[in-house]
Length: 308
Picture 1 (cartoon, rainbow, N blue to C red):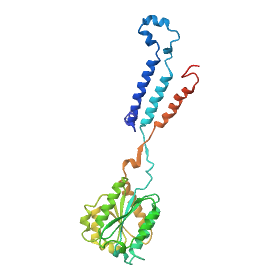
Picture 2 (cartoon, rainbow, N blue to C red):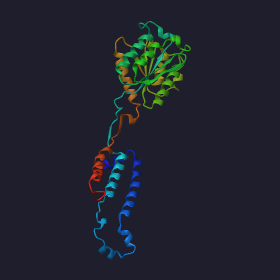
Picture 3 (tube, rainbow, N blue to C red):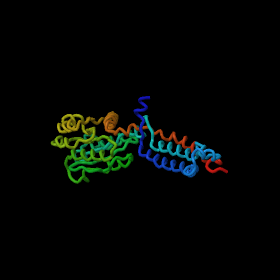
Picture 4 (cartoon, helix red, strand yellow):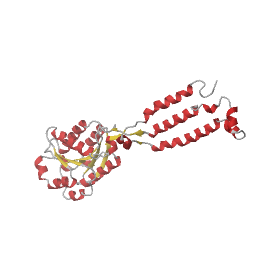
């Protein structure tokens, strides 16, 4: 019982103000219905009791009283009484992920057939296929970072836009990973639903690790699309992963890397979900609607409001 009292509250407490006009109207109606009040000013109260026949005020439960009670219950129902929590309808939805794809000449290397960029696209397609219903956005970067798509559940358009990217269409060559990560973090913040960043790249330029310190803002998973030996020898890449506190996943010839990516993205993305996204207070006010209906039904009874 103590736990119930401590948890009981209203989701919309402002609705309780509706009781104020109800009380005012009920009180005014009671005074207007009391016909003996006018005579009480000129006749002694003891004598008035003997003169009144069939006192209307004797009917203590008048129609206005029932209306007042219905209004009071309705105000409580609208206020949304609650004392228990329930899973949010969004609890099963996967948190969004911003894919940060490197589109630079190094990604056209053919040591991962057909090219590193093509392998990255294939892996992104496999990942999105297994993240059904989970929103994904896309950022392309080389010498500059560009938002291609904000998070969307339409994976087909994400893959179509990723397929159209090529180093030749990027404004300038280079490696501005820090700018791309900062942009992805800003998009996730604007969305307000948490999420994580998936970097898909083969290398990291020297000096980017220092710049990444100011770009952090969301959990990061780094998917290295390069041969294992190349990834292990890439000191700037390792430094960038360390600076971001990211989880490094290396590409494989099968789908083992996709399974690992799914676990990493889910774990890291769920950690950023706002509390209201996973659980909410259970609305209990609608149960009072049956009581309101029962009280209002009395108004349809013949002779209740106006005697016939």
